[in-house]
Amino acid sequence: MRLLLRRATRIMVQQHVWIMIALVVDAVIAVAGIFIGPGFNMAGLLAVGPLLACARCNGRMTALVAAYALVLCGLLAAVTGTAGSRIEGYRFGMVAVAGAFAVLAAVIRSRRENALIKISERVQHAILRPLPAELGGVAFASHYQSATTQALVGGDLYDIMMTQFGPRFIIGDVKGKGLDAVGLCAAVLAIFRDLASGEACLIDLAGKMDARLSREMGIEDFVTVILAEYASGEVRIVNCGHHPPVKLSAGVQELQVMTPDKFASPLGLNPRPARQDITLKPGDRLLFYTDGLVETRDHKGRFFDLSQQTIAEALAEPDLDAAVRQLVSLLLEHAGGRLDDDVLLVLGEPDVTKETPPDEPIRPPVTSGR
Image (cartoon, rainbow, N blue to C red; front, side, top):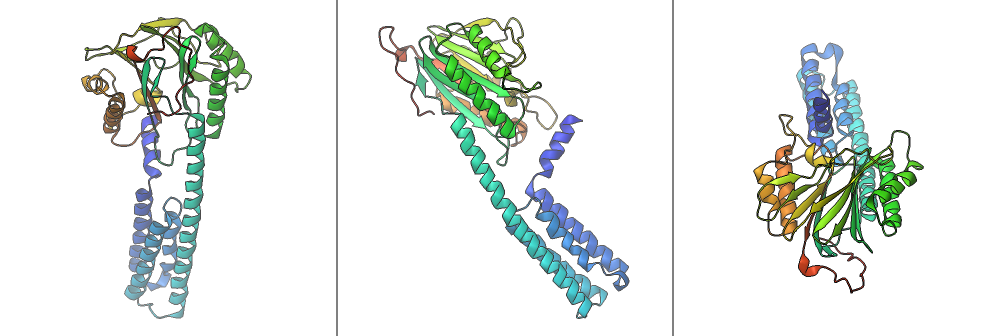
């Protein structure tokens, strides 16, 4: 039932659906007016079509519906024999005025929505800084896929920074969407950036982040996160309620889900995580992601299965960016071209030729990413 409701909601926000509804409603009114005859003239009700269209359509589409309503109004008057009468002129004028107001309302609404979308995109870009292409001997590629072009700012987050312990990375998902989620995302990233360089132990880092965040979150709020620390030949992670990463070993066309030994609750719910060490040899890849990847369904309600051979083949592309793009293509193909939730992907691969020598001072992270 929940899946059907989500699909119905996704369909009802599409512009062409509202256009069809408006056209059909006006057509039904016109046909009913013809059958009833001039005894109960229904021409004035044709204003319903443009008023419906302006709720979701842009000004141009609403104007087309308004013109369609005027054509039906004239046709109805001709068939019922009321054309040329003063009362019919009033009805035609009423439909025309309603159509004009509908077009104006659609234009104003579209401009406001576009302004809000631009603001939300700028906020998202300000919070989610682009990942560097390479940091501390690890190459990265990332991709953020919004559910729809009109989607609110989501709750997915990530960041990476160079510390005295090596590159440290965070990926997470905040409960909810919209401005509340944006505020919590900003708080999580600010606390991570403040604490990541001073805590030697990832478990202690998670504990202090939970303590700081608990003072800012509501009783039902939580944040699933993975904290990762890249070191020579391995990556150490602490998982607090997040989906586990998947590993693609060099020369092996099969993904391995790096499930932790025990489940830990998300931040905000007093987690007790354990550290997990994952061996990463040159050529091995580790994919971090948010729940939008594995919870995406196809038209039959089936989840996106990471065990598919095509996914391993996509992630094995020689270029990291190409591998991520291929994975996104497979996801969109599975979902029929539209997503119900935002998706954040981060693919990392160690590169020993670019590791920072032990006696070389640590340089600040590169700010331009792929």
